[in-house]
Amino acid sequence: MRDRSHPDSDKIYALLEGLKEQLKEAGYIPETRFVLHDIDQEVKEEALMSHSERLATAQGLLSSPARSPIRVIKNLRVCVDCHNAIKIISKLVGRELVMRDAKRFHHFNDGKCSCNDYW
Image: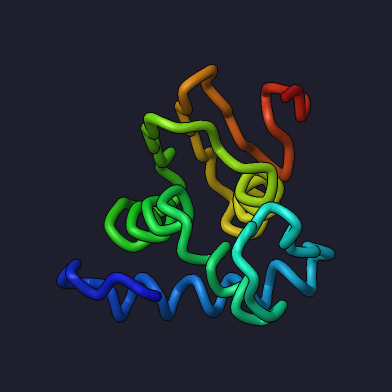
């Protein structure tokens, strides 16, 4: 299920695993109802952790200077689960995360989003 074609894929997935534990400690509950495959709960959670916006955010955290903003551009809408997770990630890492999806810009900072969770 995990794409390993990126040269830093091991580091990216290791960072996501570490963030997964921190997210759960911060109160994150995966929105697995948006995974439409008929698979068990644990595999659904794993599928959510492999969404492109999370991979891009992890790559940005690994490759950019501390405290610098991270910008991600996506041609699809950000799913509700990723939106919720990235809000918490912005608070955990203390960085501004800017995500452009098909409809709007989302500026995540200190656990909040500029869209005020408007969908």
